[in-house]
Length: 183
Image (cartoon, rainbow, N blue to C red):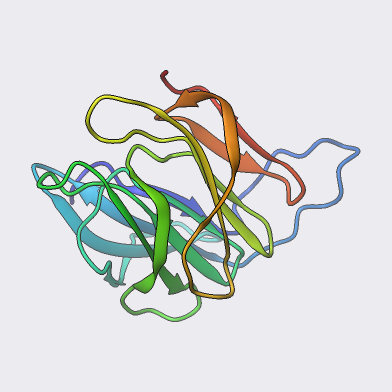
């Protein structure tokens, strides 16, 4: 299969500070969406986290995308941005329900088109995309948020202290953190 999958593990092992509250188990399904070889692919696959084995077809994205960002509240996965080799970046947000296989549906739009969005994080309510690249020449400092349970457009949450793309994002339910990347 193609390389470049964007992996989201729901319920996978997470390192936790001993003083932090226990991390909730969000289920046994890990979802992979979007890939690229010489074109963006609309593939969605999933694995059972608790046992070794091959991935299984889940469905398809609304269109092939690569290098977007995805986050989840444990019930719904939202995937924003990315590119497809014909357009430099998208603002489209897609979503799926993790427990049910099937295709993604339109959720809404990010506030700006962007790609290289590895920096997404969520809690039980809010999903966020942090930074990214405009697909042409500039990294971005934009932070968007959505209410994961309700479809609709993202709203501006604020700005990063510096523009960054190709970052990693994580969170603990209270705080989202972005790290690494390029200016």
